[in-house]
Length: 605
Image 1 (cartoon, one colour):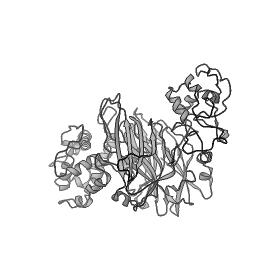
Image 2 (cartoon, helix red, strand yellow):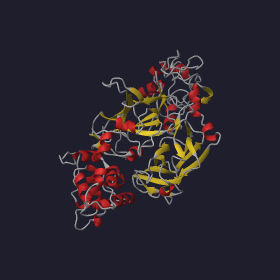
Image 3 (cartoon, helix red, strand yellow):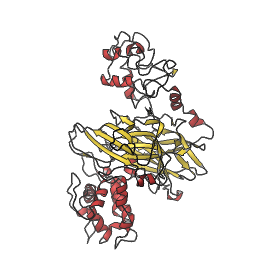
Image 4 (cartoon, helix red, strand yellow):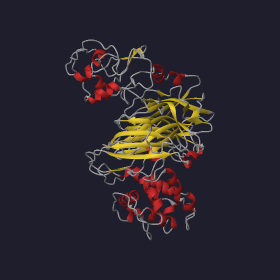
């Protein structure tokens, strides 16, 4: 049976730490701060209720029972034998009589003798991949010991962080990018990384992208507002960090047959993207956070890539107990061709939603499972916790073949919400993705997105956005690339333009976004391209929002003599409404399209 071992480890460099929340839980069980690691009695297993010794992420069998008891040390929990090793939880934790109470201020009757979530001693209970209460001590030690990845032969390191005292705007959501050069003397693999944390009150997450375009494409001057790195070409994720994690070094287990690549033949520069979350609109905030990467010329067999599987169209009504959304990546002929029609190996998977997320699953269906009755689970989070993401490590890697399907299911609860929640990169919006690390990486793909757009799958989306048909439009200004503009409009996120009460907020980030969209040559008055685009987006919810913002923030930019986007009605729509025009198929796609940028923005948080 395949082992799915959930761990909050740095296979895509997600970091672990002793969070204040889990320290609080330690105090609610007897001897919670002094439970020995079953694999090494000289170490503590701080996250007693978790499969990861440092806490956070997937709960072990004891942790699930502790949660079911309302995170209280009850008599029922005390008398149970959660791990099935013949001793009650109370006996293992030093409270065999079940008399200890968290609010008593007294010490337990005895010291803890063993772990209530894993059978011990490990010398008696051999590791069994199908029994979650047994431990693979060799793997545990390998995960936690990053010394070789940091101080091994020929390992180098580089710090990539925002310049000192970089100003944070007084707005709720800001994405800021900073470009830096990478070594290009030879090819390297990332072996480990570490978060460099400054303003923890504001930093939400960080992603370090590698870029395939020449070094001349790099913006070396200063940080800039971004939804995605500019001029990056074929990008890949080198490292990442999200809030709730500390600054511990994260590394790859030695038996993972792949790692992110940088250097000669792959990428000459990188982009650090930082998401600042400032819901209180604090003034005068600064930040210089970043990431230190360790890399080695001693390469693993494969380069690692990242695939985003899920659903772009999300519409969650308010006050619903449960709403489920699904999306797939079908390894049909057109998708598998991007991977040279060869199988890929899934190394890790992480379910990703936002605040309304309650449960998530990422599964694989084989091509011969036509009734979809035998899912192979690679990531299951029941429950899902937005502030406690779990990276599920698949050991051994699960091979996905042409004809197979990766499917993601996301379940939400909108109790307490007053309006419809839709897809978006803001924390108050929602997403539905399974973020999959795989090998070998495809260098044929600009993005790692393979998701449904409503009822339209990825392949149909690609076909409908045919560059040749758009570029053939008559009276197209020479400098106009309609495909590029359509992609920009479809992927642009308007969150910098709205305050917490949904009123228009004309921040610098918002004005820069408007300038970028509406300065396009494609928007020249009386050009066919402008007419086409206005017609294409006539009923588009995103475009209507652009019109509202344009009218409020840049009324002086109305173009005399032609219909300006800021002068069109600001009515809003609550859902996409088909119109029956000839361009309907493309319109459907544009309404719901998104490239890897939006999907990856919250890949770790």
